[in-house]
Image 1 (cartoon, rainbow, N blue to C red):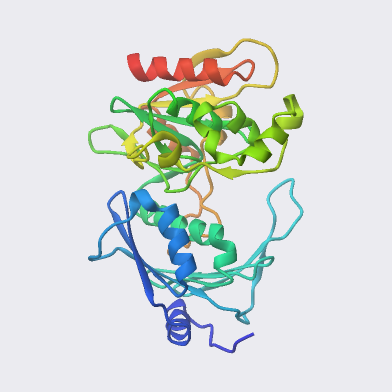
Image 2: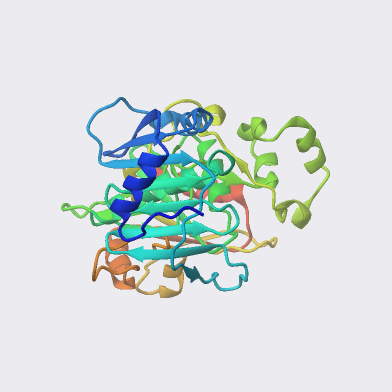
Length: 360
């Protein structure tokens, strides 16, 4: 435990940056937003460079500065416990709100995250928890977009022939799996699980993705020929002996490197949003049904697309942590909405999605 005054994010980050200097730099560009990442550890620099390879940029003026410090530290503060989501019991995070931002502490890993304006810092065992560092960087981009008028959507996204399609669905419906099936049909990848969406001045809706690789289970890998390299051969052999629910319920997750599996320049982040497909299917043998719907008539489907901002968003005074349903309804009136129901069939689902992308 180190004794540093925790009065503002600005003072805290200044103290930590002075005590734990950073020697390495990485510049990233995400859809008009430039990042400078200063890193104390070369191993972590190399990991982040490989992960963000399609978005590495040259040096220059930046919109967001983040410093990342490999250090064994803990900061004493009056933390508030973040209660687990509905259906879960394990407490994973706690936080402190300061006048100019927020501190989040991960209980299990002892990672600390400070954010507010340009005072963005991650400190702790970063090399062993590079996934949390990636999430922190991506959350800073999400906040940057939300503060510029976007809504947050819980969806994957792809683009084909200058038309964009988002895939939403309640938990376990297979957004990522279907998105990767669409990639085999020639689409470009926009996002895996989060979209920032906005209605432009000419009544066109745009979507912006997050530079996060899809994380998929073994069942997704075994049923997509483009993902052969994702699982080591000895593990693939073991998983291939499983069938049905035993395969799909496995907790193993693997990152899918889009460039390695599908080729260069296939991860693009930004696209129009022409079609929203809501996955509302079930694991049975009934045929897939595709029906055009409007969210005004089917408000039960809207929660599948809406997403709360979460703990890593620090709104300014009087700014809401969540966006009202009416804002989503108004935006989606400009978008073709399709409900896929019936039984889960990713091949048939991909056929339907490509038909809409090709023909409108």
